[in-house]
Image 1 (cartoon, rainbow, N blue to C red):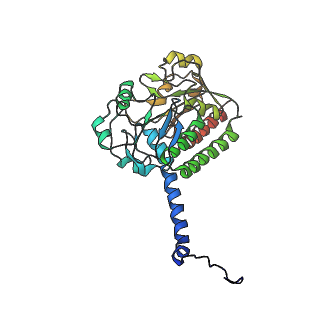
Image 2 (image 1 turned 30 degrees about the vertical axis):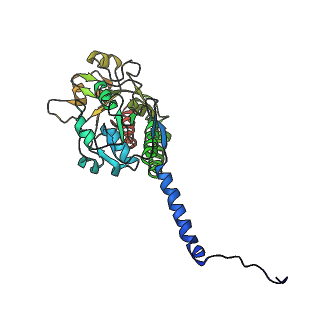
Image 3 (image 1 turned 120 degrees about the vertical axis):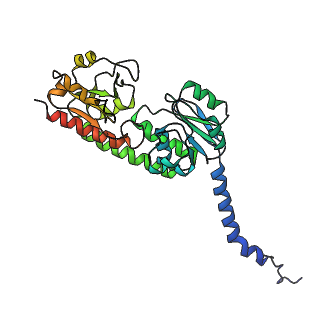
Length: 310
């Protein structure tokens, strides 16, 4: 060959034409692999929960869990729920798998879940043992601090593969709490009795998340020091503590006077000042991002009670 002759480098036209398509295929393959990647999170019982891929069929075993799953962006993946799962509106259309008294195990199996989210202290020990026998991954939910709501949403988002929506919901909730804390946390302390039931009389101790909400609003739970999370107390104990404000839920039965039972005890500061408050809805009673709205109501009521001080 002459010095000027060069051996041509062959590049098949078909290979050149397929390069962009091949790149797209690789991107899609990587995305698909990421969607199938195993995920591990720690639940509220301290257990590591590992899924081979993000959950696609989830059953919620408590109303607050249903809300958390929807808040995490996984509403479309919830295939069953416990009774009273009524928020958001779409939750009302979910197939029910039971109540706090009984779980329909056959219904659970028929829905073919790949993840069960249970309430650690709300579902009975017998129910939890039954669910364990199904060999389906279980995530225990038990938010005890206000920020646990945000981390619950983000951890569930990881298990569902809906991280972006979960992170957005958690950040929005945290912003609301920060604003409330900045406004109310350093207001003068107010002694508060929180009533969850009137007949018999039940309250919450300092370990319950509602007690943290009271503190954020500048309140002091008069029964924070009791050992039982939801203790029964007597009328005399409340009278002895003499709270400045009494908070409870709305009464839905004519036979239940709710917080207004205390009108029979005019010696109470809360009665003298007219500071008996019934909060509407479930916003404060469920550990979900909606709790920020319930805390806002609570803070407003306690601020009203402060204005009534003489």
